[in-house]
Image (tube, rainbow, N blue to C red; front, top):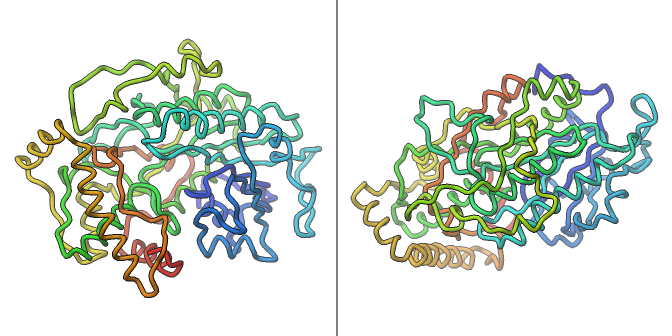
Length: 459
């Protein structure tokens, strides 16, 4: 916990929007940790049902939600339905017999803090879904929040974004790309996630953003790390060496989901602690225009047509912020202290499953790239077919057999490309006082992640 930022005297009322399949469950538990509660009440609102569940919900989250003394409320709602927003942004007067609004001075009756965890994660999802599920969902919620009367408008509005940018893998001696580095958004997904920040940043909200590295954690089967763990188990089952396409020093910064939750909370305290003008002067960065045309290039395993081209869809959306409008927001990278690389992650996955691993030499990598020019899709399909077939057999041979699981070794084409995550996290440490609970990826933690999935009959 930070020694730089002071928590409010009375724990705040918190609204979490979306993120049930990513960080929301972890954030809820972090805020309502009985040993160190940081909120007096948390409402998590998302589209999924929890009873019966229509998405995976881990046992620890369900225990918190169903506890008689828990201060967590789950609200199933279509977040794009603006007619529901007024109700959504209004806390109850009491929850489970406890009054919630007798706090602070004045007649403030709203949520102190809103965490926006909404957004479409899939790289290959159609642009219309990226626009609807990421951009329009987040922007409509933030617009509704900004239009609330003063006694209901959130005091701090925090969004989580992901490393959906093209990033050069810098040498290990470099701290990585800082928040002020103008990174090109990665494909359609990256552009609409980036435009979401510009859109919300242009509203009348006390707004800030956390940008996380490759994340992993308990109950989290998405992201960049757990799929590697699944593939490692497949190679243990196949009794084969796990081979990687690229060099071992490719940087892939990591962060535990609990530390993402911690940093989201610290940013909310930061937003509450300073005047907006002081904060912008100290920590804001200018967000470049999202839809600038990138320079074209030939085939590369580091790029694809979906990444290097831009459709004109944005021109038909009137809420897109014009290039002439400057938008500046507080933005913080959050990474652990591991300095993770392709090699270090391969090693720890191999140690988890007691398997051998290696990297294709430069000659073989050249052959792969030459083949990929002809049919990269076919190569990806062949690899996925091998992985998924083995995984299906593993699930079927479990005792008792596992009939279905959201966990999969399947990787889309984008995951096979040379993607670096290379971010400088020093600003969050300096201004937010961020200290990672999990400073590095440990075999013991990866085994705990697998164990919990196995106990839930998913692995």
